[in-house]
Figure 1: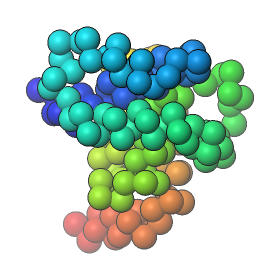
Figure 2 (figure 1 turned 180 degrees about the horizontal axis):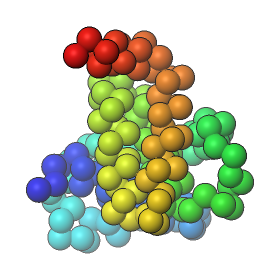
Figure 3 (figure 1 turned 90 degrees about the vertical axis):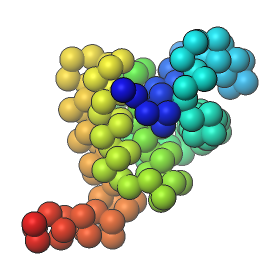
Figure 4 (figure 1 turned 120 degrees about the vertical axis):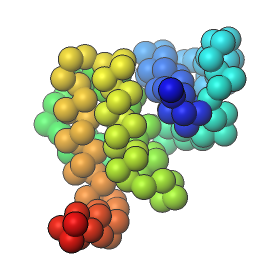
Length: 149
């Protein structure tokens, strides 16, 4: 059973993917298209809009941020993986209320759904490194808790 937040992230990735392939499409037109899906009503609309419009607005900065954590050229990263990375980078950097392990896990699961066979491993590696940088205190705290268990 998918949560409303998972559905929001899935629709956001689909929208980011569509925008990535055709950057002339305004986000509002992409949103309208995605709303035609019967399952859209089950998504967290506020989260969806935050992610889609946030990534479109900050795509260049988010791209520079995630590109520091892999050695592939832009052309070598699949549009699905790129869309997931940008969405997760936005959440990691601008939504501290969501725990970083949740963001990374959601990104991995969405990549497994929409991406290539091992795309989730690439996404996981990039996001682990990004989280360690942008949420250093939270990552350190999480690691300390794991050691204590």
